[in-house]
Length: 435
Ligand code: NMX
Ligand code: MLT
Image (cartoon, rainbow, N blue to C red; front, side):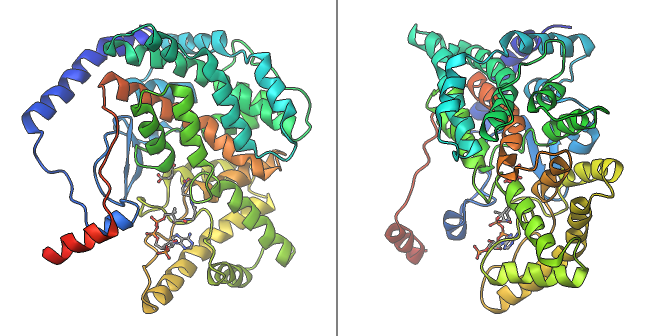
């Protein structure tokens, strides 16, 4: 089978032509409109971005290149990367070739570890990760080729070079940051010949005699890999990349968005919430205690982490995929049992609370179901990685693959610099009053 680069090389001309003819023939047709509510409401539902790696259907969840996510849960993260980029699944030979490419690129330069070691001990793990990514920018192929006058048609190729390096190094960086930040020893090396998920599990240094932690890491990385183009991290990465900033700048910017509590940081907030709940009630809480705790959270003006979503209106299939793993491998773990009980109680609490909000003249809560962050941390905790302030880094290791896929494709079709128009409140008032 041809390599990832060869598959892309063969497909990109037709992809460019498809986009060119679409814009030429239908450029003035309307896809979406913007209301005042949307301008002030996080652009929710405004259809104005292009993303060909995946789509989130409100009533189905993530669809990757036409496949519903749960049909892909057996795939390994490197296969997902191939699929996101090309729309094709690699055969065994294609997968192994990609793995060997990652082997070649996996070494992290010593100066990065020197900086990580010197950071204050209480630095946030996500700040360490995005700093480490920025330090790698020194070797950006895109930047070097650009400085030498690279042709626009080659931008995607230079981006692919940086992307492969980042895909190979991100698990090494993330695992090393875990070990440095929490005094678990020196960073460990990538093992040549091992897949990405197992390598990551191994480098975290978790004892895994039955291989179940490696299985969890493969599943985790596969399920978190992409979530179309509008989420904060993907959108930010796209905007920064559109200025022709290289992959290191663009991805680290996106991950800084993932580090927010309403986005990827919710996975660690969720474990904290579950542990507080269990501490308060001395173990797995009763449904009544849980209801009381959830209402206390809401009435104190906080969100219930892991519940709700800007697009989804059903249980997140990523939650379902991880839940199946928990049921099989850790059904007796009290944290997993608490997560399960939260699922029984919280949707109704959110629904009741939403009714109260509406009566008080506020917005309803649009989605009462769990998203991926409601469960991911509890599965990791079981394997002894209990430092939950680290968990957003796990999400980041996976999401980098999706962010990079989107960046490469944006350069392939030469999306221009992103520059929408803003309006002042006075202008909006004047405009609507004339309508
Ligand atoms: N707990 C309490 N209030 C909520 C929740 C929740 N879980 N979800 C939504 N709301 C509130 C929301 O804050 C908003 O309040 P206000 O109008 O006062 O600002 C109101 O309900 C309407 O919000 P929605 O339209 O339902 O949701 P929106 O699209 O604005 O936000 C989230 C989506 C995901 C930011 C929101 O559901 C949330 O904060 N959830 C908890 C945090 C979380 O799990 N984030 C992870 C998302 C997934 N990820 O991995 O990134
Ligand atoms: C994601 O995975 O990016 C989140 O579910 C957030 C989103 O899609 O808005």
